[in-house]
Length: 262
Image (tube, rainbow, N blue to C red):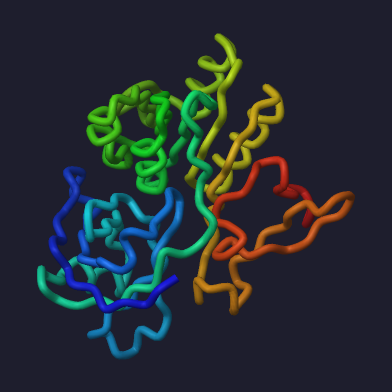
């Protein structure tokens, strides 16, 4: 984990026009990034922005690190108006990421909800085995990075709740259809909203498949101090709270105690 003042290389709207792609020159951080990790970003020009904002790392190329973000509030609105050569404060890479399948290992199936695609891109890029990406969203504009995954040689199966792109329904429907055709040697990797992750965890249990889930929790400090991002995780016959910013965000699906607080 390093703290670095980085410079913006580019900051352009995504083809969907709802999201932005931010590329930063981060020569000390970029070589350390593993799939599924994130960075904590602070806009130095906003004096009252005490807390950093976490963003999944989308792409790494040479000395640059890229993120995808949506303009949803004061911080991201200010970020969207920043231009190349301006400075940002970055801490990263943070968190426990995905396990890259070894050569000849598992055949990966990636499951993403909306901008969960960003957290899965490096995994797809670095996996020696190509697989299938299942991506879901409410509507067409929520389906991100499809071209990037296809350019890596991955098959992308998109689903939207309103039927505006791909199949109509939930992302778990085509996943279930694929698993019913065969499960040997496969492993699930997922990132997205918590209800989707819970559904993927249940599917992994039903088909007796290994699965790694990137848990979507609110983070404040990003370095394990504030304890706002904890989730219940199994420890033998019991469970305990663990931090998604340090022990996660990626967890083995069998370790998550979904019903611990019910």
